[in-house]
Length: 160
Length: 160
Image (cartoon, rainbow over all chains, first blue to last red; front, top):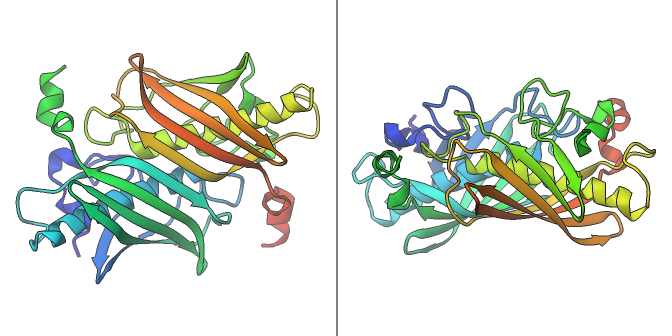
C-alpha cells in the first residue's frame, strides 16, 4: 500500500524524517485510515536518549513528519481528490509542540496516530500521539503550512 | 575545552542528539558562556527537509539537547559547583516547543544559543535559538527536568 509520503514528488522526497529518497534518515511512512492517520516505526538501537529509552529528538522528528504527512492527506481530502492527482500537496512545519508524558522504551515498535485539529486556509493543525507497549508516551501538535514557493527546488536552485 | 555533555557520566552519554558514546547521531556539544550557552553544528548533507533546507526534526533534536545540556549547566551553577563535581546533573525533556520562524538553509554552520528562562525545583526552562547566516531561523523552548530515578541505567536493567 502506498504511504502518504509515497505521493510526494521525487524532488520533495528527501526529508531526513520521511524521505523515501534519503539514503539515511528514518523513512517514516504514514497511512490515512478513516478519520485518522497511522504509522509504525521501530527505532534503531542507536536512537537512544538515556540507555533503554528513545531519543526525544527522534520522537520529535517522527511527530513532525507524521504531522506534515497527515496535513497533506487532509488537504487532498478537503478538496475531494486523490493523493495521486495534481497539483501535489506538500506541507512544512511552522510550529511543533511535543510533550513527553512518560519515557518511551527503546525496543518495541512505536505506533503513531494523527488527528486533524483544524484546517484554516494553508494551515493544518494535527495532533500526533506516540504509543509504545499500549501506553501513550508522547503527545504532540504540529502546525503545518503548505510549502511556500520560496522553498520549491526551482526557486532554491535559482537563488544559489 | 570540555563541553557540557563531556561531563555526563559514561552510562548517560549515549544520546542520539548529543551522546559522545553514540556511534551515530549528532554529537552536539554545548558550552557555557557567561550568562548563556552556545553550540555550533554543521548539518550533514542528508539532514534535509526539502532540498536546500535543514530537517525540522534534526533542528528539534538540536534544540532539545542544547536545552537539556544548558539546564544541567544551570543546575550546577545554581548550586555554586563545577560540572566535574558529584553528583552529576542530567536533565531530560518534559516538553519541547519549536517555532520555525524561517527555513533554515542547509550548508552553513548553525549557531545555537541557550538562555535560562526559569529554574523551579527540578525543572529548568530554557530558550534556544538557532541562527544560520546571521538570521535566527528557529526559536524553541525546552522544559527540562532532572532525570527521574526510573530512567537510571541500574533501574532500567533491573526491570528487564
